[in-house]
Image (cartoon, rainbow, N blue to C red; front, side, top):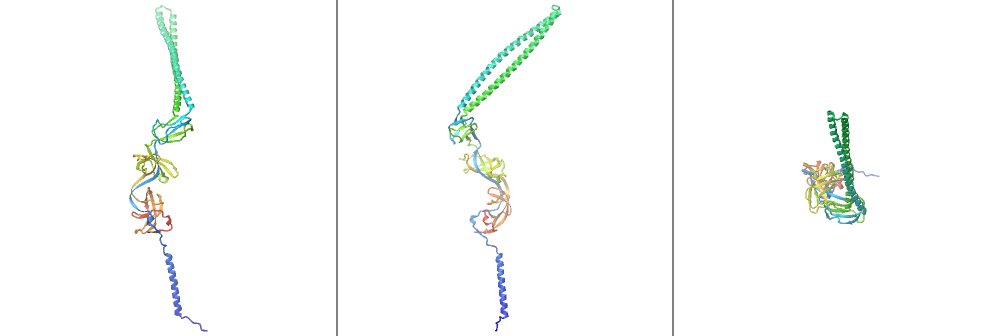
Length: 415
């Protein structure tokens, strides 16, 4: 059988064409593999874009809070008693003498009367003691005067006896007897003087002791009267009654808070600053408090040493006149000026940008049609802006919105 044969030129041509086709397929495959995936598209209107600028930079921290009175007075119960009647309701303007509550305590009236009677008796005892001691002292003084007179008489007799003895008119023995009587009279006079001084000191001591007992009873009576008068609970200061924390018929013990009065003319702002920002706040820094009806300037006067729920309580004393409508417990926003820089490279604060940290942001191209991811190191921060340490230059525009959806890509297109 005859087998047909393919000419050699045709076989060679087929091999060349096949090899060329396979090579072309391989080249196309390699080219496609090297192509970058198409950048996703992001709607420009949904993005927050800002420009890097250089110039003055004011560092601020923000906190919200409320206005509170600088002078607040809690009125306690002075003694165990029962609430009889509420005279004034919260919100009323009061004076120091305004009666807020009426309390009752029958036993207190009895104790007050007993204290007053004891005081009266002690005063009478002191008066009687003075009379008794004065009479005894007069007797002592009379006796001392008599002894003094005997002493002076003995002096005269002794001198006379000595003179007569020298003249030989009386014996020497009589003169000696006169001198002995003089010595005895001198001793008796000295003893009487000492006895009288001792009696005066003793009288003074007895009077002092009785006076101390009298003062003790006087203070006790004063306390009882104050407790009795305290049954009519008064405001104590001028201001506004903020709260009554007891009900009629309620029995209260000494020290129980009954009502709260505040002076609304002197208010301060209590701001709660995030603990990450509070580290830069010190006493004396200027601040501005927004009452939503005006802005009032002030300064930091106190910083709470404790952290509560991630915030630090900062007290701001208000210097300016309060806007109309400012009242205790009004919600406010405050900004505290921490530092002023004359020249700094700053940009709007990114959604997740924290001071002294490294972040990645999308930087817009020169034509603004696309944005490429770049690494940026941030420095000191404020409420709305933050310092750029490296990674961006003045005039460049970046996307500050949350771009976590595009974490898998390094480039996006804007439309």
